[in-house]
Length: 392
Length: 45
Image (cartoon, rainbow over all chains, first blue to last red; front, side):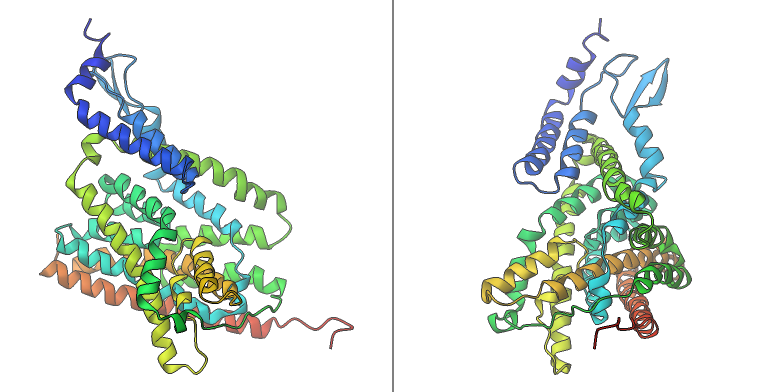
């Protein structure tokens, strides 16, 4: 008899936790549908959060969750845990997303104006600042590093690092990463305005419209992979697959594959990734003070990324005759193409005839490279430093 | 305190590493663009 009412009994035992998780799932779905904030991810995450918090009373019953259930006195994995184990813990989903992202990115703006690549490095400052903040809040080094990577503004990199360093924190880290990426239009403008003057925001920049030879577009992903492989081998699963996707795009003989990577592969993996991450948000793991801390630190990471980029651009202006609009620095975060569009919008607000979209896109594309390299650096440096400093 | 030392070292090495790799990418792009200069097609000046 108890088995028949297992759901009701389970719900009654932890009703407020379940209701709170339905509310959190509902808010994510609302943001996706009503506000159009990263709908491809927030909607599956929100629904996954509801799915995994459907109560069970334990026992062999149809109320078994999508995560785990008891069957013949054994705990067996539910369908979404199988996706989680097979797609996220094995790093297959984030790496496949990188193939899709690589096929979507046109690196021409960066090749036209390569000095913009440095903004892609400066805008990773938030990652390292946040790691220190997380350490101060009492997180262990590996967890702190995983939280800091939220500042990569790059979901797959966050998932990749967290799946190696802090599997238990994967859900809140992913939710924070994608939530703040969708909130970039809200986060960036006040930080930029606080750090720049109207005069600085009105600086005009040259648009490089030169054509990039096809050979360069083909050699670029190959050489980037080789250099990364030699300097930061641990970043190869990310940068290598990103560049593989880009090569498919630029070779111009695999049009069908390129389109499949950009559309079908991206959609399918994003869908599975989203619902699987959502399904790892069981209340017992998610409703903790740690989650609150991670959400706050994620915001810190984004703010200091933007600040790092803007301040770096201002520093360059001290030494350079040819002034850079410091807002370009903010476009060095990985959120593509949102960051560059916001920078252009802010430039237009000050001067309707100021077109800085192309340099902003260059910096934004550089941010894609910078975030992946930063992820690789963190993966390589954390174990090495822990060993060096005898941290257990 | 050891954790904080860890954090600052990670920041130093990490940012230096990211800048170093991106400097290499910059040099690589410059060399690539210099080597693969597109010849102006006929009719272009």
